Image 1 (cartoon, one colour):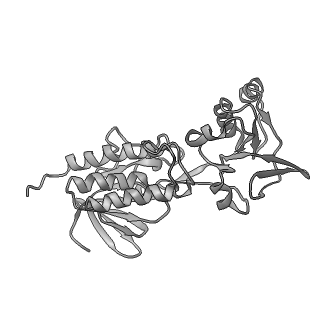
Image 2 (cartoon, rainbow, N blue to C red):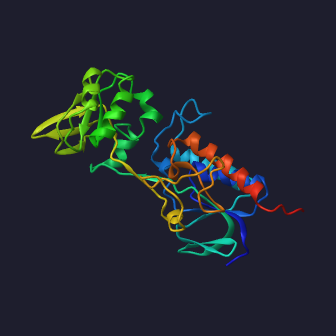
Image 3 (cartoon, rainbow, N blue to C red):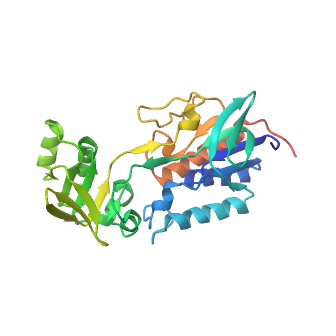
Length: 296
């Protein structure tokens, strides 16, 4: 094991790479360990990322951030961290390739969307027929025929959000809709609620649900099947989470474990690139200020 670093960043999505830029410019010895599973890689073209009015693909955005981080002096390695533990006044991170010791850790592991069972999933996402974030891209679905697919209560909330973008919004639930206020609000907003579908298909341009032998095409399907926060490493140290497994942090992005910070989609917050990079700036600055200063 090498010398103890000032900070190890787990995850190389927008948050992790932004934190790496800040810490490298603060002249803090550190490392970024990248498992290569950033959620941003699914983005075909984001028009919701500040500074890119013509849009930018997720892979390109991550490549630009990595280039900037490396040019600032950051060290980025491929490798999935499989264990994280405390050893006296430092953290020890273990990947399948190596072991790293660091005085602080920034967890930027993100979350993982539950994907629908559909052949051609990647192509459906790339062409915009299948989407996951109305906040990110509903502006690109104005006046289109939109379906929200997922558990009724979650789908209903997203349908009401999307109703301001199109008059043709339908909830395609994975469970039977309960009686209550949600149904009344959907009726008032003129949102259709279908029966539970038998399956979902992609024909190269549109997504199609089947209902007892009938087919229904949609221009855009938002899959709201849930997500899983990748917070296992932090929870192994006793970090506090919300009911969905997202980490709870304070205004400096500190978890309940001293020296362990968390940013981006693994945190209980709005899952957006702009939010993750903001978290990164706060966490990296807090790490720098918290560490004992070493004078040149």
